[in-house]
Image (cartoon, rainbow, N blue to C red; front, side, top):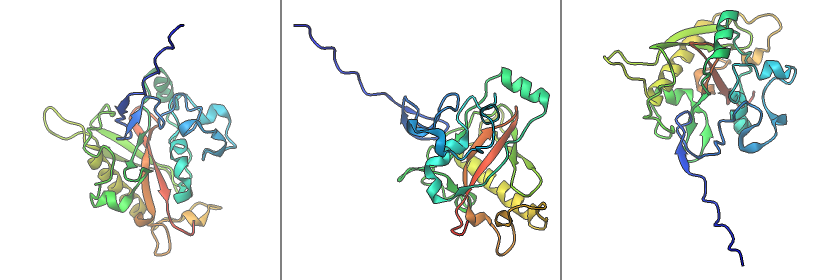
Length: 243
């Protein structure tokens, strides 16, 4: 009688530096080529713009899963701010297509697992639940990056943030420091746009800065997606109950 082969060992647990979580090797949050949603579910319920062609949705920049698909699992908690993807100049797009594109950086909370940290908590360094909060974020190639927000109804917004300290040799910032720097930028974005009129025909529900408008307390930091050589687009979730 031929002995049956031994059962396959369970997948090894590997810490994922981009999420801060310990995950199985099937990598349930990072999906190669961006062709399927987390846990192998269908892309039919993704938050990407269904009017875009597949070539636009899965451009050469998105050799990894679009962040909106990763965050779709938690869509019942609020609505992702609907943003157009930043389009870099043609020469940068060509260079990006020829180099390694970094996967998205997500901000997960633990106990329970959740994708997104409240912006106010990040600003006040309330990061006890932030997965991998002490991890060094060495995904960035330079000392600074361009943080981009393509908020609906307003002109594109960009700010340089520091991602390495000023020691010699310099060290990358930790995930906790990164979310605090990003939260400060969101605060500045809201302050800068609070006196601006939205473009004609824009959805007024996305107005920011006023007493009855979206504030920093309504927003969660979901993560970053690389959109050019030194630019990362910030994705946010609005948790206002009336959205």
